[in-house]
Structure formats: C-alpha cells, structure tokens
Amino acid sequence: MLYFSKIKLIIIYTVILLLLGFSSLNLINFTEDSFLKKKINLGLDLLGGSYLLLEVDTQPLIKQKLQNKLISLRSYFKDSNYKYSNLRVSNNKIIFNLNPDKIILFEEYIEDKNNELNPYYNQYNSFQFDLSINGTESTLSFSKFGMVEINKFALDQSLEIVRRRINETGTKEPSIQKRGSNRILIELPGLKDPNRIKKLLGRTANLSFRLVSESESSEFGNELLFDESSNSEISVNKRVILSGDSLIDAQPKMDTINNEPIVSFSLDRNGSKRFGKATSENVGKRLAIVLDDNVISAPSIREPILGGNGQISGNFTFQEATDLALLLRSGALPAPLNIIEERTVGPDLGKDSIKAGMISLIIGFSLVVIFMTMKYKLLGIVANLSLVLNLLILLGFLTLLEATLTLPGIAGIILTVGMSVDANVLIYERIKEEVKIEKSNMIAFDTGYRKSQSAILDANITTLISAIILFSLGSGPVKGFAITLGIGILTTLFTIYFFARHLTSIYVRKYKEDVINL
Image: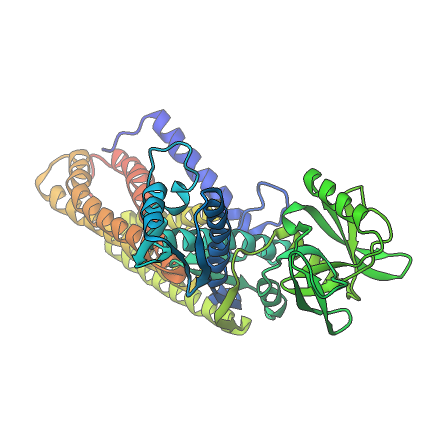
C-alpha cells in the first residue's frame, strides 16, 4: 500500500491542485458571467435576511377544474341527448340528476377505456374521479389520486413561477425549495425588507382583457369589478377576449406624451390575431385590463391594434410599472400562495454565528494539531498537513457546488476534523503494534495501513449513509449539515489514503533501516 505509480501521483496532485484552486476563488472577485465566479454562499443564519414559508391554496384551482369538467360534461349530455337537471358544482363536487337508465349508460360509457373514440374516459376514470350514485342523483368528485395530481401540479408550477419572480428582482442567492406536498420555503440571505417580495408573491397575476359592459344584460353575463384607476366599481363582461397566456414579453417604459410610467407588452402570433380582431370589432368601446379580479385600466379602443403590441397605463409609479411587468413576464400562479410563517434574521446575529463557529473551529483544530504533534512526532506533522489539506479541498468541493454554508454546516466541518484525526490515530496505533513484531519498517507500515483500512472504511461508510439519509429526509439546516459531513467524509478518506499515505511512504523509504519511534 506504500507504492505509488507516476500516473497515480499525477492524478492525485492534479485533483488536489484543482480543488485548492476552487477553494481560492472565495478570495477573488470575478465578473458575473465568468465560470470562475464560484463561491461558497452564506446561509440565512450566517448572513442574515428573510425567511418565508408559503402554502399553496388549491381550493380555487379545484373549483376551476370542476367548472371546466362541468362544461365538457354538459356538452356530452347534449351530444348524447341525455335529459339532465340540477347540473352544478357544490362542495368540490359535480352534482347532477339523470334518469336511472341513463345513469347506467353514462357509467358504462365513461369507464369504457377500450373505446378509442371515448374522449371522456381519461377525464372521468377512477384514477381522477370517483362516481357515486344515489337514486337519480349522481356525484363526481376528485379521487385521492386526482387530488395528489392537483397538489403536485400546483406546487411544481408555483415553485417555478416563484423562482422566476424572485430571480427577476435581482435578489442575491435565494434558496427556494419544496416543503411537503403543498409548501414552498424561501430564504433570502441579506434581504432586510421582504415587503416587495411578499407583494409580488401575494398576487396570482391572472391577466385578462375583457370589454366593459355598456348594458345590463349580456350573452356571457356581466360582473362588477373594482376599478383601481377610478376607485369605483364597473361592470365588465365575463367573456375573456385574451388571457395572459398569450403574452410574450412585458417591459416598463415611460410614456413621452403623458410623461407617466406604462407597461408595454407584446403578444404571440395567435394572441395578436385575436386581439386585432377584437379591437377591430369594438372600436369606441372600453377595454378592461383585469388583473386578479381588479381592473387596473379601462381605456377606450380608439383604433384597431393589429401589430401584437400594446400598452397598459394606470397612474403607476415606475416601481409599480416594473413590478407589474415582472408579474406578467413570469406568468400567473396556478393557485394563490399564503404566507404561513415569516422570520427576519439580523446581520449582527449572523456575524456572531460566524465568529462563534470560527472560534470553535480554530480551537478544535489547534488542540488537534498540538496533540498529534506531541503524540506521533514527525508522523503527527504529516497527519496535521493532511488535516489542513482536508479542510481546503472540502472548501474547494463546496465552492465547486456553489453550496450554501449554514451554522450546522460549520458544525459538519468541525466534525470532519474529528473524524480525520480519528482515522489517523487508528492507522498509527496499528503501525505501532506492527513495528514491535516486524523487523522491516516497510512491512510494518504497509501492514498497519492495510489492517486498519477495514475499520476506517466501515466507520466512514456508515456515517456517510447517515449523512445521505439526513440529506434526503431533512430540511434546510439539516441538509447543510449533511452536505458538509458527507463531502467531509470523502475528502477525509482521500487525504488519508492518498496524500498522507504518500508522504508517509516517502518518510519510511528514507528511514527504512532506522528505528522509528511512535
């Protein structure tokens, strides 16, 4: 085990130099787009900042999906000449009345998965819906699997849109993660005032263009919505001319004529056609721009808008125009988000945590260095050099991954120091025993390394398994501890069995005929 080929040495020291290079990047500032701009990020508990725990409210999404299913169900009944009554959505269920003979036909039809022409099977089969029949009244409700799918869709879509919105604000190194089946954890290191973020996340940002109703009745019905520009209610047609899904881009700009901030938007090809047709047919009428059931602007259509570009005005400040453009670019949330927990960590507390962690690391490291030097002399110095390298390449790994360092992460680094020393002590104590019975120093050292290997590997592998489990099942701080501990185990084994063993082999070869005291 004391022999190293040239190729092995080249690989070992190339890896060491690369990781030392990555570790040094924390001391150098590079440009934003540089690959070398990699650093270890400080977590919320070290840097200070804001912590938000959001919960996805899927109730509006469930109602929306049930309404969509109700429309397709009504079409099916009409196409099939089924007489029905009391078709409605109530308590997250679709309820309707059919004649008993029609109910049996309906049940057989929607469960006929072998009928390739059946468009309703995939919508109403038992994987998504449960059908219950009580006399002439039938009820369709989401199954457990259907609810799981709704929650998963809402959480995944919300996570992506939340990430877009926060990234667009330029917030430095945010941490955005899933928590359970319906929650999102957001950590914003360095952000002292999260009010703007909370305001952005609190809006679903469902955009629609609808005509202002001039009469009491309408084919699609009217509803009263609050008009933010006039602080009053206006009647708006329920028919949506265009939704926010057709938007390609939205940017804040200054209207040079009226000298006020506006939001300029552009539409995709299909949206441009629909918008052009709607504005051509309704010249002279008012067009309501509705965001989350509030009218933000209701200008008159002076001429057809055919180019697919338009403007939204509404007595905005430039910050409000910027945030509105951001919301429109990032897309609408599938469901509302509720803030259920909020915390702010001051930077002073973070500095105290860093100071306490560094003091603990320095004290522990110093005591270990003194102990190993006094106990094992020159080999103790080899172990100390290995320990220093272990910490540096651990930092290099964390830098390469652009990991976030938390206070539990510092605890994982300190634990790595202890594990590294423990492995060296096992090796040297085993070598002590072999030196007493072997005449050759080369054989004694080689045997000591080989016989201690199984105990060291067993201890480190079991700890690594624990770290993997902690990372898989734990939350933010626990994950930070698991990452540093897991990487620390790998770097410990690397430095002990490659770097320290190579230095030891040089020492033993030089003094192979002398008496070595351990």
